[in-house]
Length: 247
Ligand code: PGA
Image (cartoon, rainbow, N blue to C red; front, side, top):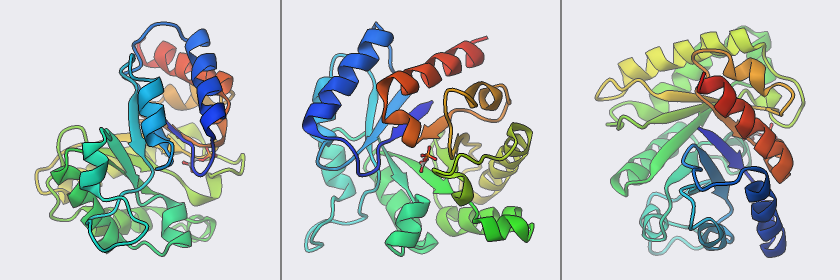
């Protein structure tokens, strides 16, 4: 699966042009392997413009509860509006909005009970990488966010090293593959029902490096930020993904 993380970007007019361009380059309606994590304000518009295709539209975050929580979108409201998936625990949510693993676990549980696929984002800082603590850190994020959680078989983790996001620097594809194998093992032993998740890679994915990532067996797809904002570069990544993974 390839997911566009639009973050706080887009406008009503730009979203329409993006859709037009993408569907010119990739004709047909089979977009079931593609998702857009839209802003809350554009969610309904994006659902509508893609309604004839089976592209998945999700959110970048959801709240675990509704009611007196000013500014929030609850999991049940998101589900009612047709939200397919939600990113949870993106590093920007963790460091800009102080989200911790316990809160993220509560959000994952709310997503699951509202039939929204949770995409748990994890990733180490540059400091952690330099100290060679990546695996311990990722394991603590996975255990903190998933212990006792009953995942379903469509569970997804996005591995996004913080130092790779928006920087143009990425780990070597072979190293990512090893980390993904590690993540699959940890999740299998941590989740209540021993599910092996799909693992997406995120962090400076572009049409230039995508093939080398998708060639790796345990890289199941990508979470794409900057390169998803331009429909043509996102379409190139999708074409590469389909070519490599359908071989
Ligand atoms: P990037 O962002 O592709 O711009 O590095 C990825 C993300 O933050 O999900």
